[in-house]
Amino acid sequence: MARGTGRKDRAPGTFGSVDKLATGYRARYFGPDGRRHKAPVLFLTKTDARAWLAQRHSEIVAQQWTPPQAIEVHKTTFTEYADQWLLTRQVAGRPLKDRTREHYQALLDDHITATFGALPLASITADDVRQWYARTLTDKPTMRSHAYGLLRTILATAVSDGKISVNPCSIRGAGTAKRVHKVRPATVGEIGTIADAMPAQWSLMVLLAAWLAMRFGELTELRRKDIDLSAEVVRVRRAVVRTDDGFKVTSPKSDAGIRDIAIPPHLIPAIEAHLSKHVGSKPDSLLFPAVGGAHLAPATLYRRFYAARAKAKRDDLRWHDLRHSGAVLAAATGATLAELMARLGHSTPQAAMRYQHAAQGRDRQIAKLLSAIAQADTPTT
Image 1 (cartoon, one colour):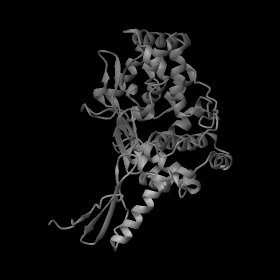
Image 2: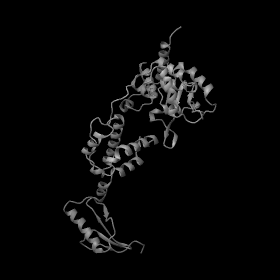
Image 3: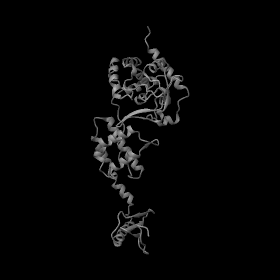
Image 4: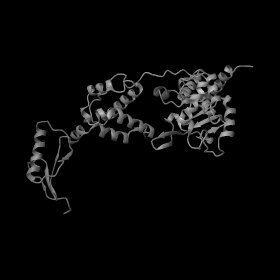
């Protein structure tokens, strides 16, 4: 006889079975769900095991029986579930990016688990959520919407997993926030002034951020091999993010972020000059490295950018607003929504992207029209 197994007590007319093991008696039975369930512990005597089975049988007869896994779900705390959610969460079939996971973890640690962490998942009510929302981050609407959105998403997954029956997050509009900073796009002249006021090695970065509407992480990971002057395109294939462990090269923000961006012709001379003066000869040489040659940190660039924007009398302008400015300039060419989304690497609105596609060659026209805007704004002497 194998270790841990023994005689089985299946007397006719009795409910379930009792197995004699080396360390005690194991009670098992088939529930109304057709599955075999076992007691959570081994019993010292067969009588104790049979008494436990009798209780389960009485619950079934009285239609008060609950599957053991449902009882365990009821005991699962929010923190236990949220931790597992972070480990297994996927977007578009891929794990969360490191920066996104860190952001979610910070929201949980700083604003969510203090209220919900110790509560059983199934016990969280709509009133609990409303009371939490009423006092959380009231002076930071964007962060507040992020925290609520995360809580709602985690609990929506719990609904899908069958852990809870209803999502208690039901506050209309709580997942969105009104823009606190109203963006005033930079004009063509302001973009030029800011670029001229930047250190020479980062001047082109301003022009690409604006005229190509590129993200900071895409710009700081650009390498010589990504610039195709024969085709007049910038090939965006990677991005870099700063995590708790340092800089990490990753994919762009979304699948739509992998794209070829047509270069407005008026930028070609500036790009050629930059490649000649400020970029190493190897294909992997960064276009905009830090002084030491590593990836450029946001704080390093921003110090110079703040001084440069002051020259243009645009102290309100943030670096990311250059991308917004580029989107406005591209829209001024008459580009369609799908074309703008393709140029900027946007994956939303999803419905539009599902049924609309950028016309072949249209991005080249957009680039030429952007140069036409620049030339029209250039004073004549």
